[in-house]
Length: 534
Image (tube, rainbow, N blue to C red; front, side, top):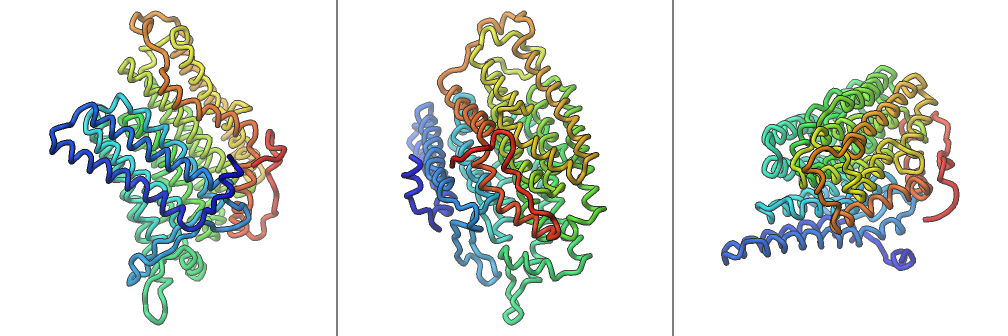
């Protein structure tokens, strides 16, 4: 299989095709829905068509994107480039490419979306065509964020993400859905406006001196940012940082997240945790570090960001510890995990940056899996309160197995994907910030406490509620959702070298961009990474 995929020439066509496929799927859905309504043929059969079209679209995207793994050259810089004029009078181009940072997030997206759509197969029974169409548009926007090489295109995709997610939460969410959707939209939109101002400022600064036409290409923005005054770069850094900090979300800009997670449907929670939050940390790696290296290495700025990151790590774990709602507990654990990612990014060592990338990927898998498992319970019992459960391992052994695997990944048990990332972040951060790394290590203990306590209350407490004694175990669809994630959790945990090798050259280059005096080190020799493989 790998030889076949390697033989495929993945040129400039692949990225626009991946962006276009969800839009084509959405168009088919809405056309089918319109025709069905006009013909008065709406109903279960029509809704099933919408589900299968969406699943088929996501499966095609996953299959097509899989070849990127083998076609990608870790030392090749930007690859699979596609560039064409979009709004030439404004210096805006439709420019796409991938490097050793963005390729992982693209593959994470295409891997999780067909799994996520299965989570709402039976629970979403109103406006099914619209629901799935919005998720398809959301997927195009998320992929566009990770692919864009034009900064204005990046901003457009960044903002488009807000619209379908707002409606997904606001229409198909829980009882407080409009409050959660509005809070999500307002927080992220206000932060994004500051980023827009910064992008416009840089694009105008990079304007052609003859024609006066702005230039929003990534290379032009990167070059012009180094010519600005230190004061300008400081303000521009904070304008970008505001948008990224809210999206991550970094403490204390996190308050929209628990509400959005709790009220969103399961598929929305999976996308929020596994993919949307990564847009913020991706922005730090793509823009904040290379565009403003002097600001990033400024001790005052760096210490403030690192202090917020470590505070978020501990705060998220402590607040999760007192939650009575399973979904809210996992939401606060995300605040803790993403704080760990920011710590790894701003510690700025080879190990910590690779660790930050690995924690992002691991968090996407483990937290996505936990939200899927919580959704299964909610579909059966229509509650997420720990007090409603107990002893489920006796009547749902298969469910108990997959929940245990997801929990082990979340708390970074050795042999799972979570261990590699947290190990690298903490050891890499200890090189430059030993005190903060030591404090962050406390979160590992706290995570084990609150997650294992949740596991005990759901699976191992007495089976003393009659309604839980006849609860059905996982069905084939739910096993199909969880089996690929579980396999990847153990594969990455036992053999992370292929991932580390693909990301290391780009991250080493990033370190040299930010701090040319840093010593080049390699972190591929970590536990479980020895040996070859693709």
